[in-house]
Image (tube, rainbow, N blue to C red; front, side, top):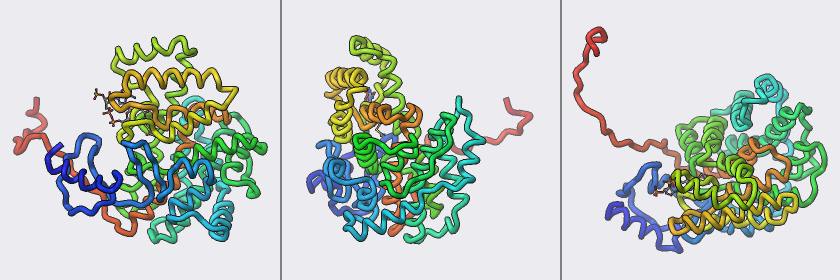
Length: 403
Ligand code: ACO
C-alpha cells in the first residue's frame, strides 16, 4: 500500500471505522488485484465493518432486524431508508403480492430447457429473469418510478420462479402463489404445496434478511456496473445472478454442504483439514475480503442451525470444522462466512443442494435494487483502468510469412 493510501484510509476511518468522512476526488489509492482497496461510491444502504464483525442496514444492526422484522420490512428499509409504518407497509406488501405470479411463458420455457441432470438452478433462474425482462414493457425507462416498479416485480416473482424450478425438477406441477401469505410463507408454500411450519418460516425469514445486502460485493458491483451504463434493470440482475453463482461468492454454500457430506463424521474433520492445508486448498465457507473476524451473519445462522434436531450430525461436523479452521487460520483473519452454516438450514427447509444459491439471489435482490436506485441519482458509468504490461510498436507481418 502506498503512503497516500494509508492517509486516505485513516481519514475514512475517523468515525467509528465508517466510510463517512469527506475526501477529495480524485484520491490516490493503491488498488490491488480483485479491486482490493477500490472505492466505487458513497452509500447509506449498508455498511460492512470487517474489523468489528458488524453489518448495518440503513443504520440498524442486522441481528436486530433478523430477530424482529420480516423480509418485506427489510426490503422496504433498504430501498426507502426507513422502516415502513402500517400504511406504508400495507401499500408495499399489496404491490408485491400483486406481482408474485410468473407469466406462463416463463414456466413453459423453463420446462422445455430444463435438463434435470445438467441444468444448474442458478443458470435457469438467470435465464428466467432474462425472459421476465423480455416480457416487461418500458425496460429502458431508468426513472426511479419505473426501476422501482420493475425491481418490486423481481422481488415478488423470483421466489415463484425458484419454487417452480424446484417442483419441475421433481416432476411436480408448480403451485400458484397465495396472496393471503407473507413473502416467506408463500415461498415455502409454493415449494412444498402446503402451509409451512412456523419454525421453517422463521428460519427462512432470518436467512433472507441476513442475505439481503452486503456492501460492494462481486454481484452488487456487477449489477451496478451494468446499470451504470443506463442499461435496464433485468440485464443488471441477470449479470448479478451470474456473479453470485460462482463458488468464491454465493455458490460457496452448495460446496460447503457437499464437503460436510464427504467428511461424514466428526472423527474425520482433523484429517480433512490437514489434507486441505497440505494441498494448500481453500476451505469453502471460510474467509472474506472484508471480515477479518467472525462474520456476524454466520453467528446468527449458527445459532439457528444448532436448534435443528434432524440436522444434528451435520451441525456437529460444522461446529468442529469451524473450531479447527479458526484454530489454524484465525490469526490470518480467516473465519466462517455466511455460507458456512446456511446450507444446514436450507437442507432442513427441503431445498436440494444445487438450489441453495437461488435462495441467496431471491434475498439479495432487495440490496441489488436499493443500491442501483441509490446510485442512479449520481449515475456515472463505471470505467476503471488496467495496467498495460504488453509491448508497443510491434511490426505487422503478413499471415503467410508468420511463423
Ligand atoms: N481457506 C484457507 N485459506 C484461505 C481461505 C479459505 N477459505 N480464504 C482465504 N484464504 C487465504 C488464502 O490462501 C490467502 O493466503 P496467502 O496470503 O497465504 O496466500 C489469504 O487467505 C487471502 O486470500 P484471498 O483469496 O486472496 O482473499 P480474497 O479476499 O481475494 O478472497 C474469498 C475472499 C474469495 C471469500 C476467499 O476467502 C475464499 O475463496 N473463501 C472460500 C470461498 C467462500 O467461502 N466464499 C464465500 C464468501 S462469502 C460470500 O461471497 C457470500
